[in-house]
Image (cartoon, rainbow, N blue to C red; front, side, top):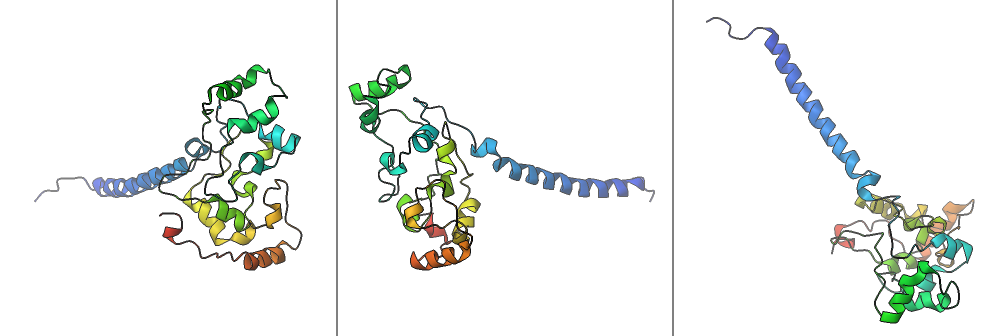
Length: 217
């Protein structure tokens, strides 16, 4: 029986098969890079807000403690969004007639909440409790980054599961004394390893807290 295909088709077939594998691997790699990119995760993107609130001004400039606005961060899963009354406490006397703060004054007059846009928004299937992280010695900056340097607030980390697991597996890299939780400029001492080991034992932090039910309930 005469040969139907030329012998070169053997080489072409091999190239096609292996080429397809490389193409598929490249697509998988590109997709993996894409879903972790800042474009998708929103890392570093300042959100437009009804009022251009500056943590840099209020925290670093005026020295206002995180808990003044986020009142439930130590006792609740949700850190809390400050009510308009919190803003008015100061701004009925300071910048009381500023056009920039008209949204705040309108909210106070009408008793309608300011429509803040959420910056850190976990998926509905992931559970996060601020209070337990504070109790276990995790500072605000660990997750939120240098908020005190942000003129407008942006997301500091990807919030991907792998990011959470890195901290759960290695709490010694992030733990700090409880009285330094809200200190945005705290840095560990030179013997940070000894301090971390002491705090992990004192706060009963379990690095094995990585089972699915911890976050997916």
